[in-house]
Structures are given as structure tokens and as C-alpha cells.
Length: 629
Image (tube, rainbow, N blue to C red; front, side, top):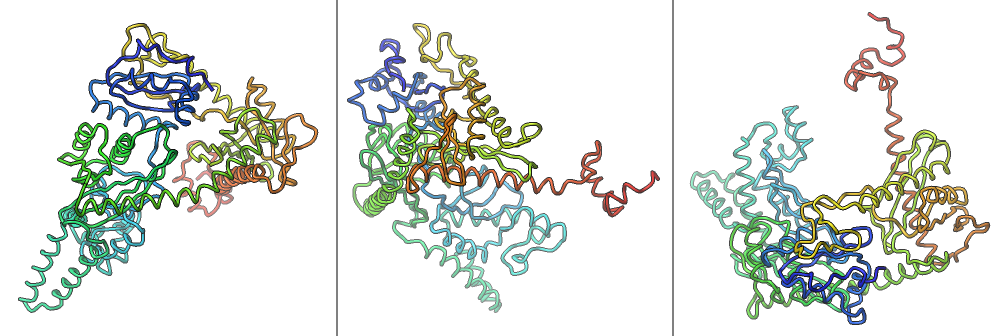
């Protein structure tokens, strides 16, 4: 770890203006982003005596190797820039409000020619209206099924839609009157889009308009003695009322609000939010996050609102009111930013009395219970992971903590379709975003040791190349800014390049430990690959399947871990995950190779012509025997 005094800027060089700052580690990765009304006051607080800092703040400043900052014109600009950088760099020491589960939303793809209604999770898409979140998922699926009685908007996938359009026959929903069948022209694109807009208005809280229109149609049908149609309208009205009866009425019907509450201790915080639309609770979300800095409740809430609403636009995502347990530090600037995203007025409030304060107390109780439940569940998991990592470090005699472990496995069938997998574990948990799979060909595929040498060489050659590139100053960086810090020439006020994005690397930063699936031959190959690249600070072990022995390079005898050891369990889980990942890629590659035709190797012959030739002649053998004519 770095000594903070090695990169601490001189106090007089730090401006007193508002701005945003970034801490970077030795690999030039951004590990923390923050903003300040007064940069000098905020940054000097990080370089106080270590004993006076919070544990995680102390860890952050010792992990960092440099600090840089950017001066902005106002606190509003600081909020915007801080949010942008947190989304871009995903710093490990910033609080990241990731949902504890993926909540389902009702989505309407209004950007399409024929909008589609579906239940969606995950990332938001541009041009799609979202309603929710809803919990449980069964509730929203039942809601969609009920709504299709009245709003006959398509729900089929694009593939089903195109197939129906090509055949001239709608799908089953079109036959049972739960879809207006735009695929076969029963309704024009304009009318279908209007139907989708009515559904969006209904879900947006304008239920009265839809039910009133149906009641008028029912009365007109009765006046014309068309009782069949009147009965159908009556059933539609009942269906729409059932949709809203599922949600508790808590506030006035014109109330659209998100209500936040939080429970916290010294290390973690649990956040709960109730989404109220049309006076009814439509959904609930929750997060449990680790606290990095000794933040006040107001600072914490400010970062929460930035991340919850930063990706949202329009009144569908940002309500008219946001009710909070405490007022954010920069409430005025934050409210102005949210109004710009919403496109109309909105208000941040702390309710003190009445129905809204009572509902806030209910949300607070949910947050208290969520934190208690999280601590009860995680206590065993954290203890187990920590014990496993510590036991493994002690058993292998390693001088460094095992913060990152990479495991490699080779998969093939009798030397064909040779592939490799790389899985990553950080702090005892899999990091799937860093998983890699590699295809091995040529001389490297002759046996497992050659394959392992090739894979390790390729991975760490890329690491060395990225490391060399990061040592070069990026375009636009002030002269003098380098690995030792972001300090430029005297008088420089903006000391960070804000226009050049962080370079994307093929692989992440290096591991503390490399685990290979195999015994002494595989370990020797991996160790030789690292030595040939001049890398000496990464440790290698192998886990042999037969007796679960742990092999070290150049050791005559293996390390035998107790069968009940948490360290052995950790190694087994990593090895099995690497094996699973490699097998899945091998099966995929083998499946593709089994469908290869002899015609595929002929230059200038494409898939369509190959298919036509095989269809005409019946087989490649008959094609080969055919004459030129």
C-alpha cells in the first residue's frame, strides 16, 4: 500500500473553488470520486493522521497512489460531473446503490412502429415507457393479463410478429381477442399506437378517464339494446378496477411520490423506497450498501438520489414529490438538477406530520428490518469467506492478502476444439464481469501444458501492455502529471484531463494468486510463462482433482489442506467454476464444428449457395461426382 504522504499535494496548490476530485491507485484505476464546495478543505481532510480516519477511508487513502481534481463553476455542475464520473468509472470505494434483486417493470416500447407491452428487468432502454417496479413478479404478470382485456396491445416478440405477418395468420392471442393483431392489418399503426398510449395513461394514474369512457360505451350499448356489448364493457370496467384494487390506497389519488427511508450503523446502511402512483403503492425497492466514508445522513441521501434518478428522464421515472427522512446537503442544486431531468416541477420534502409522515414511518420500519435481516444472513457468509482466504494464505505461506484470485482450466475432447477459461474471485466472491474464455489453436493445442503456457502468456502479455500504456501521459494531460500524482506546474488550477476517457483494457489488474486446474506439469507451465514475461510478484498453485492436492512450483511434495478446511472449499469452488465455464464454451465450439460442411472451405462460396447446392444434389458426395455441366 502507498504512503499518503508520497502523493499528498501541497495545501497552497489546491484551489478553494467548488470541484470534483478523483483518487487513483498504482494501476491508474479510479478508486474514489467525490465533490466539494471547497476542494482545499475537503482534500486536506483525507491526509489527517491515519489514527483519526475511519477504517475504510484509511484503507482508501493508503490504496490510492495519486489524487487529481477539476474545478467547476458551481455546486450544480459539481453534482453533474460527480454523477458522470461515478457512472463511468464505477469506483470501488464509492457507495454503489445496486438493487438487492432485479425488480420487474411493466414496459411499453413506444419507440417502435407497433408498440409492445412486456414485463422487463435490468437496464432501461431509450424510447420505452416503464411503470413500477412491481413486487412480486406474479402481480405484474396478472396485471398485464387483465389489461389485455381492454387494451389490445401486442405482447409478442419481434420474431413471432414477423412470422405472423409473413403467413397472414395472427398468433393465439389474436384469435382469443387479447390482441388487436396489427401483424395482419386488423388495426392501423396509428390506431395501435393510440391504444398503447391509452394503456400508458391508465398506468400513469389516469384510470378515471378510461373507466369513464367504458361506462359511456356501456350506457350507449344498453340504450341500443345491445346487451352483449354492454356486458363486455361491464366486464372490462371490472377488470380495470381489479388492477387498482391490488394496490393499497394510502394517499390522495393525485399523489405521485417516491418515499425513501434508511437504517444504518457504522459500516452499512439499508435503504428502502416505496413508489406511490395515483395514491397507491405500486412497488418497492431496497439496497444494502457498505459505507466508505464517515458521511452524514444528508450526504448519503444526496448520493442515493443521484444514482437512483440519474438515468431517468421524464415524469414516468421521476415523480412530482420525493419524500426523504432528512434534507440533502445541496437540496436546492439537487432539486434543480432533478427538475431538468423530469422536464417539469418536482419537490424534495421531509414530511413532519399527516399521512405522508405515517407512510414514511412504515418505510422506515421496512429499512430497519432489511438491515437486521441482512446482518443475520451475511454474518456467516462473511466469516466463511474471510476464514477461507486467511487459511489459504497461511497454508501457502503467501506474504500478501488474497484480494484477487484467477483460476484457469483447459477443456477439449481428444485434442479437438481446445479452449480455456479464466474465472475471477475478488474478496472471496466471483466477479463475472472479468471472466474470460480463450480459444487455443496451432502448436499451443498439442497438450495441456502447452495450452496452459499459451493462456497464461496471453493473459499477462496483455497486462504488461496495458501497464506500459498507462505509464504514458494521456493526450491533454498537463506536463508533469504522472504516476506520482496529478500535480502540474505551479499555478495550474484544473489538474485533470476531463475530455479523455479512461482507456479500456482487455484484462483487469493482476491477481495475487493464479490457480490452475491440474498438478505439477500444469503448475510448471504456468510458472514458466510468468517467468518468461519477467513477472515475479504473482504466485501460482495447482489443484489436482484426484486427491485435491495443492501443488506449488518446484516443490516435490504437495500441500495437503484438511478436508474440512474453508481454504480447500474456496479453491474447490473456484476450480469447479472454471471447469464449468470452460466446458460450456467447449460444447458451444464443438456444436458449431459438427455442422461444418466440406463446402464451407471453398473460397467464394457463401452459406446461401452452399445450401442451394446441397438441396439440389442431395449430398456433397453427389455434388462431387457431378459433371461440369
